[in-house]
Every structure is written in C-alpha cells, then in structure tokens.
Length: 351
Image (cartoon, rainbow, N blue to C red; front, side, top):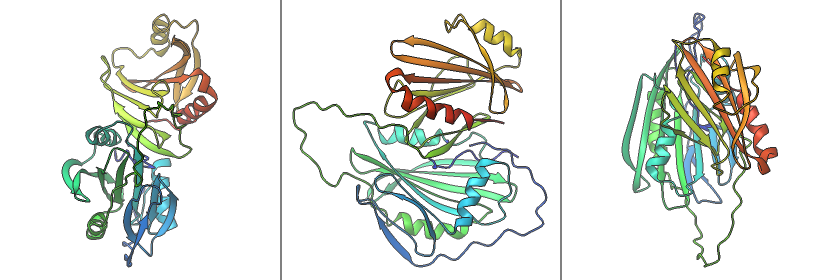
C-alpha cells in the first residue's frame, strides 16, 4: 500500500514506502490530551511559537530547528515508519520547525522545494496562500493512507525579511489529525516568523563568506519510486531533464556539490550491463564497476567534466524503471562532501 514520502526533518524534508498490513488486532491508541501552551523563542532569529507544555522536546537548535512530540514513543514511531514498513498503532503526532537561511531564494521557490519532498501518489495535496504573522505565506496540506489509517499533515511556510524562511509542520498518524487540528490552528496563530533581529549596515567591502558544510542531521526525501536521506540544509529542486520520468537535484550552499536522481523508463531495455557499456563513452569513463544501491544490482562510473569537480554516476534497474544517481563534488572540499554523499547513497531505497 503506497503512502507518504516526507518528514521534514527531518525534513528535513520530500516520501514513498510500502506498508504491509499484518492484521491490526490491537486498536490504535487514542490521541493524548494537550496541556497548556508554552512559548518557545529562538535566540538567534527571534522566531516564536507556542507548544504543548506536556509534550516531549526531542530537538532544539538555535537558528536551525525545534521539534516536539507527545512522547518519546511518538518520536520513535516517526523514525520507524521511515526506516521500514510498519504499522503505527498509536496516534503519534509532531510539531517540527525549520529555520532556513533564504540566500536569495523567493517564497515561491522555497514552497516548491518543500512540495518536491511530497510524493505524487498522496491521497490529497493542497497548496493555499494564507497569512502568517500578518505576512503572505503558504499552507501545504497532505494526506497519505497507511495500514492503520490516515497520515495527515500541514506545512506552513513564510518569510519576514530577506534573512530566514520559517517552515512549521504539523502531522499525525491514525486518523488523529482532526483531534489535533484545533490546537495546531491556535499554535500557528501564535507564530512570530524568523528574521534577523539586528540589521547591520552593509559596507562597501566585499566579504567572502564560507559556504555552510552539509548538515550532520538528515531528512528523508522521496521521489518517484525511491526515498533517500539528505542533509537537512540541502534544498531539493525538480529539474527539467529530457528523457526522464522524474528528475530532482539536491544541494546546499555550493552549486558544484550536489546529488541528482533521475528516473528513466526502462520498459524497452532492461539489460543494465549493455546500458552502462553504451554510456561509458558519454561519460568519458574507461571502466564501470559492479555494486548495489537501494537493494538492487548496480554499476557506477567515475568521471569529470569540469576542472576541480569530480563526479560519479550510478545505474540501477528495478521493474520498468532505471534509477540514475549522480554525485558531484568540489575536489578541494572532497573530504567534507564525498563521505556525506556516500552515506546518503547508503540510505537510498528503491521501491
């Protein structure tokens, strides 16, 4: 049974898995009551949000994120559903906040990045312009059908100035969203969007700012028939790539360090060895090596088309689709990016 393909965390963040029903003999636990609300204030961006005082804080990082669940068990339920097919059997819910530097992006671009984290076979997905903290924003509403009921959630996205984007996500399992919805609505009305509280005068001296390295915290991102974990400070973007069924690129501050995933129709040619052999000359690669990715047999080739940028491309086939995963990294920063990219590849799941 196909379902969701996202978590913003985390997100962070894209999610398609197969849920295998083993027969639900135990009734799902009822949602836990929500207590009085407290206010969380981010010390770097002045972001503010209310949250249930009886929930369990899982992660807090100034200027980056704030995540809270009704209990540690609820947090584990979210982890398990992304790690392997499972039934939830409780009303696990979450409030997840991500504060992202804008770095020249627009609100519409940020919204599209977040929509790319959602799979195409959701039961329902809605994008709606709204007002957050008195400013224009968007709400993304989604639903996915799981073995134990409906998984439902909303993302609220807004920007206050040119420094930070604020992304607030509410979600819950087992048809419990209707219970939490009035509380979530009250919480979103309390939000003060992230901003740079100290506006510094920009001088005429050009300063070189070092690109932020890949985050050590990953989020699950999903696409057509696959899921992969990526640093949560990487943004996803659907890319128009001729001859593909699906194509998306994921990158952080450095445009020359990215992961590209392409899905290609393989219904007419499923001989992977021949496909790779035919493509060696296009990549100027002298050899291809056998390996496996996403649990299926694969080949990879190393190549380089740009000075100081190395690349590696993987080919794998499952069913009628070929999955092509490309890693690009800046050679002087190889020690920082390549190990992270290889770890990302190990999380790849091909459904």
